[in-house]
Amino acid sequence: MTKSEKVEIIIRKLDEFYPDPPIPLEHKDPFTLLISVLLSAQTTDKMVNRVTPTLFSQGDTPEKLSKLTVEQIRSIIKPIGLAPGKAKAIVGLCQILLEKHNGNVPDNFKDLEELPGVGHKTASVVMAQAFAVPAFPVDTHIHRLAYRWGLSNGKSVTQTEKDLKKHFPREKWNTLHLQIIYFGREYCPARRHAREVCPLCAIIGRKTDFR
Image: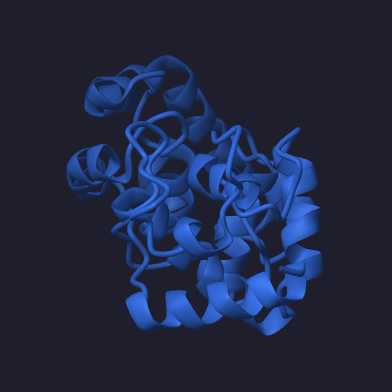
């Protein structure tokens, strides 16, 4: 089976399973999305959604949130892990947004990736989900499935992103990013994965060396 044939099957199947995939992180605007994505590093969306209501009740804009100390933010987000570093990044991020961007979240990769705690993946999520700019953020689910489906070599998330952007139509990137995440969680987990019953791996997956 060629990669183009695999791509057609993936798009068709994922559109059947998740025709309108919701954004898993609860937010109301680009700023609250940015903070939520920053907090999601090395934890689950469910855990982030547990702490952000309290955090945003204290400050849901850069101006309001910047009035909290690192210690106050850390105490709120402590359940998700890596709280000290994330709290420090949030305070620094708010200051930069106020000083350089009039309190607004920038809508370009360069300025986003200059913010504390914001890497390429976080910037990609914000660009895709807040500003509808085509991007293909690669998380652990997408990285794993791209390898299982033989669309990338699995050596790095950077390479996986390049490969997926090459294989899939640009207009599908933002939707596919969410669809693959949901599919990975529900049908194609990292552990106890059964290729023969997986709706996609049974058709297009590698037969060996699964990750």
